[in-house]
Image 1 (cartoon, rainbow over the protein chains, first blue to last red):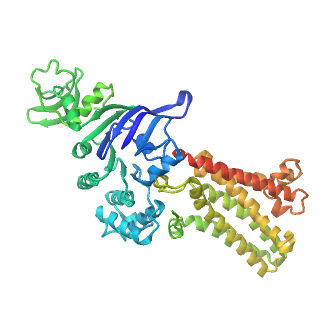
Image 2 (image 1 turned 60 degrees about the horizontal axis):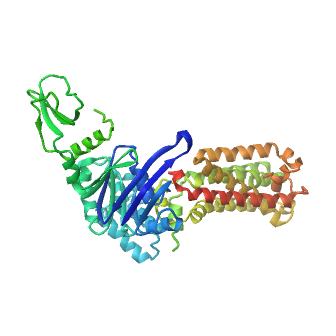
Length: 298
Length: 220
């Protein structure tokens, strides 16, 4: 169980201080938990704090009772942690097998027989057994990510933290990766941070949306979608004029008789022909951000 | 739990960092051969007393932070001190090996180690400045959180001390901090105090490196 209370993180001091986290409260249990938010929302900072790499400025963060404010607590958490950072650096001259084996050694798996077994299992799990002997420098982005998740799993962690794991992957790789994470979440806590709404909707039963270092929403995807009900419309306009009146365009589609817009906003205003539609998670996310005063690029 | 593998330490070592000291060693071997036995003491003193410390300082600046998988290491249950040791010990080991190898080469050309004093004094001639610049290079890199800055500062300290070594040697306080006293002024009355002071300063630098390296967030 992850217990986060009034967590703050400030980088620097004085007038140039950056407040990355401004009082985060979360309780996260077993299963897949999604952390969603725009770039700069504080997701990576929160992930790094939970991984014991970054120290928080205030509040508290505990994982299975281990306090991340202390050095001993951080070491204890790292012993049960699997971590896949956003920017995954690897030793390109090593083979996939060697890299995962090395990470296993660093994580304290000393017994060679047990380690060999764990490395093979981890590579098998991510579908990299066949390519295990090949050097990492020849791998695609997706293959590197899979090796990255294998090293995260090699110590059979109780907590798996994955930061933007699907960034840069092709659609097929993304689906495979998402399914893999869901399978892993069956017996551990998996924390998935992303700004790709679709990834969360397909995998998480619990999620939090972060913006400017604060939790805007914490609940299930269904609850988040429910909050946007009555605020999403479809509107087809024949002219080139874009709908305004405080409406945010989520998507647009060029049709034979005009442009079909999917809109999110408080009310549809003068567009009487607009039809209310069922919101999706992406609409709900836009609605949430809009209410929080977050400007969306259109 | 050992959490260390010599095999992977070697496999992940950057080859250019091995060529760099090896090239200097080769250059000084050529210089030694060209200048001949009459100047082998000067060649040896220049290599072990000046070149080895400079290369150690530059390599130390790169050793700790120049690691593509640094964030993954930070997420592993590793303590800061063994991590530092794992990164700096190979730099020292390599430079120590090259210093000893050059002395062996010098002996083949008729080098008299007694010109340094005792055998132990000959070893202190490279050991003291090498450890001092290694400690300074790694501390500068960690303070700046930048490898290149650490290397530049180590090089700057080296050149300032080498050029102004006469001034340092004559200065009442500066004499204790002159890195090159052991190789170049081994008859100086403050030699032992200088070696002791530099040893303590190096230890302080290593301690500061350890304190800085605990704050992992500075380096990702």
